[in-house]
Amino acid sequence: MDDSNELLAVRRAKVDRLRELGAEPFGRAFPNVTASGKILAEFAEDRAVRCAGRVVAHRDMGKSHFLHLQDADGKLQIYVQTKTLPERERELFKLVDLGDFIGVDGTLFVTRTGEKTVKVSGLTFLSKALRPPPGKYHGLQDVEQRYRQRYLDLISNPEVRRTLTLRSQIVAETRRLLQEQDFLEVETPMMQAVAGGAAAQPFVTRHHALNMELFLRIAPELYLKRLLVGGYDKVFELNRNFRNEGISRKHNPEFTMLEAYWAYADYEQMANLVEELITHLAEKFCGGPVLRHPRRDADGQVIGEKVIDLTRPWPRKKYRDCLTEVAGADWFTISAGERRARAEQLGVELIPGLADFEVTNQVYEKLVEARTMNPLFVTHLPKELVPLAKQNADDDSVVDVYELVINGQEISPGYSELNDPVVQRQRLEHQAGGEPQKLDEDFLTALEHGMPPAGGLGLGIDRLVMLLTGAESIRDVILFPLMKAKN
Image (cartoon, rainbow, N blue to C red):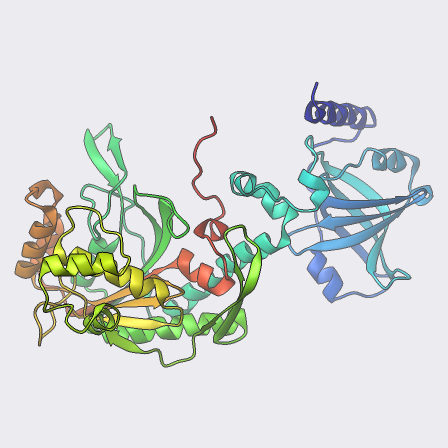
């Protein structure tokens, strides 16, 4: 029998002993509990309190014991003097292990070392942990285990819990700000008959009753635009998208996206909106527009400080100008073959078969986007890259869009939305590569009924949280990132 099985056997024996004592090891409700944060904030000596939580530390001093209970707010010290407990509860206390949930009644006092503490007068078993915590709560270090068993990560790493709690607060505040500006939150289908709204590989499923193939959505865009046709002027959706593509530090197959659409607006108003939103979040959750986070190496060791300045206004620069600054003033006048050769000279790896505009975009992503830390709105992208955006009035080779780049990655695209149904059909037919089944005919029919001019934006919530918390990987801001199955 290995150590883990031995420990499991010992704890199972304690479960049996608890039942012998008439105590339910996996107990029932324990009402009228006060959270540790409130107890500490409203602390008053000799005040009676009731609290509950997981035992995460236990210091045995013979007849006196100091334990830490952990709840959603944090940790609270409790003091148990066994001789003052009723005999049955003394026996129960002997069966308490690290990881167990207990409830206590007691009074508040301050120890000689100045720590606010609950002196326990009554103890209730709430749930017996059959498995011990990792590393006696000194921290779960194995990265694979941290992501695969996130519950252990949350128990043992307070910083992880703070980051993921902050994520929920950021999402809630984002919703509040949009609703305050009269945007209506809506829900559109997660399963779609046509995978539209972006160029990405979808997940495929099947509805047996209707005998039809369906796709987990890659974007909600085409349904949200139907709502503009239907008469809503300001709508947003904050929910999951799914893309059957690679996993990396910046990518997870399911991710959270905000998309918002505003009738009678354009891409510049959407840029103003996202700038206002992100700076507000930075002020509220980071204390100001200048973000300071540890800079880490590949092994996670701190090697300095990363500073990102979100002070408004944020600069705006045309895509073409960004390219000529890094790839040469003649980039757009040389031949396609010369562009490819120069890209490789600049250290940009290219796979065979890329179209000319894709070569240019690879140079942009590697030499502009990846090196841009402070906010930059890159505007007027080639129309081939953004088939759902309106063409520029002065240069029909580009569209009226922005890509907001911060922290070396795109965090938000925004468009003046294309509402010409004839041009939209041409663009989507080109994107579909002659496969008519990939066209969303219902969406095109909706456009033919008339869609007002509008601005739209997307905002990657996972990347936004990475920016505001300093997380190095998207896995650090998702509660349960996708993991490869164990062998």
